[in-house]
Length: 235
Figure 1 (cartoon, rainbow, N blue to C red):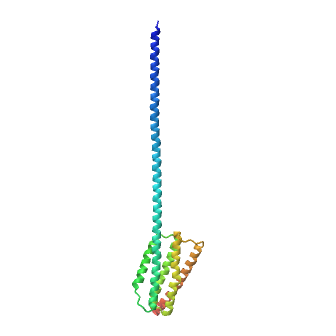
Figure 2: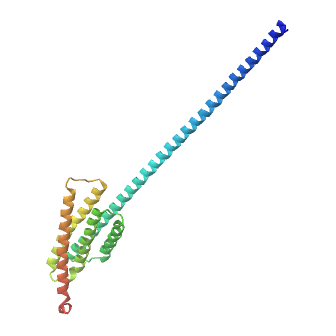
């Protein structure tokens, strides 16, 4: 028969074991909670870091894209400015050569040839970059400037000097001047600097007028060259 004292001792031991198990469980839960919180915080921190890195990369790409657009726009502005300057300089050099010859002054052909070469260089570069509508205007002006060069070179052999000088002055101050103006306006319109509600109609009207005047002048110059060549050229 178990004594009351022994039974009481066992109950105390069992109670102690229960306390130890409970304590251990609480400790394990606490450790688990701490580890879980630490791991969860680490995961959230990693996600936040990745999101921040992605945002930085996207922002950097947007900035690079903006820089590329600004660089391309500046390159276009530079090209257009050089093209416009070369066209004006070519026209002025040809007109000045006509005026000097009309006054009986000596004309240095190197000045006109230098302006012609400068325009040819800028025009050849522009051909690779201009959009269709702008290239159409530049091409028409290129042909008009070429006729102007022929006008100057053909002055000494013209059968009627007064008529030849009048024709040259009219060409450089009229149709060709309008052509240079049309190029400038078209370039500004393409850059968004100058916009008009009826720009396209105006562009086509001026372009048609320039081409028509150039063709008429070209036929006249061809006829004069043919006449100056004499009977031998007709056989």
